Every structure is written in structure tokens, then in C-alpha cells.
Length: 157
Image 1: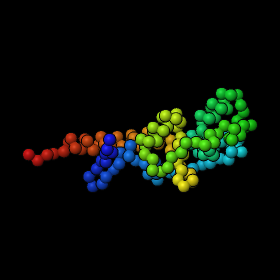
Image 2: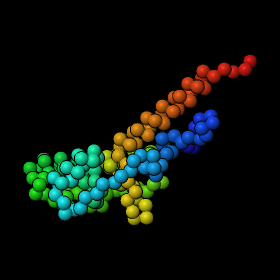
Image 3: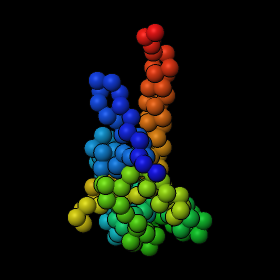
Image 4: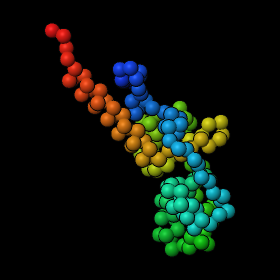
């Protein structure tokens, strides 16, 4: 199926959310990536996630879900458990060229909510499922606005 590009008058072409790349999303958002060492305690990792208001830290990757499932539910102690013991060592990654639609498909099939973006072996950022949903909502709002403008337009004749 061909990709649609929507035009916004003098604004020029605007890509739909399914065409938008994670690279453009990372450029548009404040993209500070906080990291933690594998030798740090899980308590330090969860504390940093709370302080930074993020749901994951790259190290491999450690997420709130890892904490809940691999520490709390197993009766472990976060001050005495190391990040390396619960982190995902080799997470699935994407490059900045991946689209919103491709990332949603990966996250849905693999059942995770954070996706590291890597280029030339360097971490560029992390895209969350929330980032992808926000891109889709923004795109849909834009399309609705354009359709409303089209429908309400005066036609000669």
C-alpha cells in the first residue's frame, strides 16, 4: 500500500505518523538519555528512573517491568540486587530510520514498552510506547483538521 503524504497549505508536506521516523521524533523531543552501570543496585536504578521520570534506563536495558517481575515478585531486595542480575543484556534495537508503524509492530509483537534507538553502535535515545501513541494522536488531529478545512471550503460555482 502506498504511503500517504498530507499537505498543509503553505506549511508544506507533513508526514503521517506511520511515515514519521523515530529519528525525527528524537530530534523533536528533549532527548536526554540517562544510563546506569550494570554494577549499580536495582534500588539506585529505580531511584534514578523515578528522579528522571523515565520508565527505562539503557545498560542493556532495565525497566520498571523488570523491577516488578524480577525483584518484587521474587521477594528479592532492591538494595542488594545488582542491575546486571535483572537487566535485558541484548535488547531489541532500531535505527533512526524506523517508522512509528514499524516500532509499534515490534513493541506489540515482542510485548515491551521501550525501544532503544542505535546508530553506528551509539545509543541515540529511547522511544517509548507513549511517544509512539502521541505521534499517532498528533497525526490524526492534523488529518482531521485538514479534512474539516477541506469540507468547509467555499467552492466556485
